Image 1 (cartoon, one colour):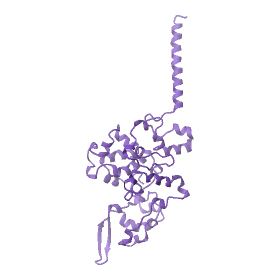
Image 2 (cartoon, helix red, strand yellow):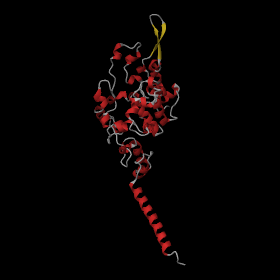
Image 3 (cartoon, rainbow, N blue to C red):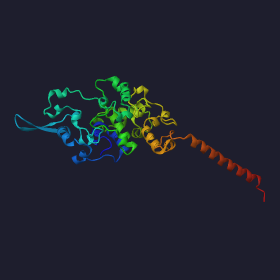
Length: 333
């Protein structure tokens, strides 16, 4: 299974240079198509869902015109295409399509009322359920309500803009490396904010707006590959795992020391999940020392610094005493 969004999707949405940067953070993660038998392992509704995927699983679909008995082929609306391999690795892979879509969708052509159907929202399912209590979806909703996306256009923007229910999965729990998680999460943002269309995909990096807007960053490629956009562009929350209140650009992180310091904000955002897992396995002290990443200026331990100063002082004192004794007793036999 793939651990990042499909390569086809990325190629259609991101500039070539930016695509190379984020994919280099997840090298070797791209997978291949699998058979329906593999999908049946993760879902009891695979065969039922094929009624939908027969049309919505590809770029073309066909049907028989009843009046002429001719087989007609048409291009599927891009927004209505759901790739099987992406759906069956998503959080909702075990669901039936009809769990969320009305049975009217089984009729073809779909009746007009299906187009007017009001889809479920995330909180229709993810609220007041003990299994998901640790995720604090109500707090996430409150944060999202205050984000620039919702405030700018609440009618056109929703959770689904970033978390497509057909393809989204919680990447940190399913990818083997943190870089793969960063690549996946950044692709969600960059699919809208890359600042270019596909015709610019071969353009020089400095002609693409996202690079111009982040020109203050030294070594941009390294930052895009190893840090998620939300680290700098959301309000940090201590009560939920991933912050959802996207801030206006004026309030984004601008000071290097906010990340590159002993009290790095990355420990409260990017490394929050891993730190929690480490504490469960190693305990607090080891978790603080056995971090999975090195950030210049951030990986410091005050106790080790004090011990190092003591060792340095004792070493210097020993050398000084040795020199004094050599001078004092140089003629002593």
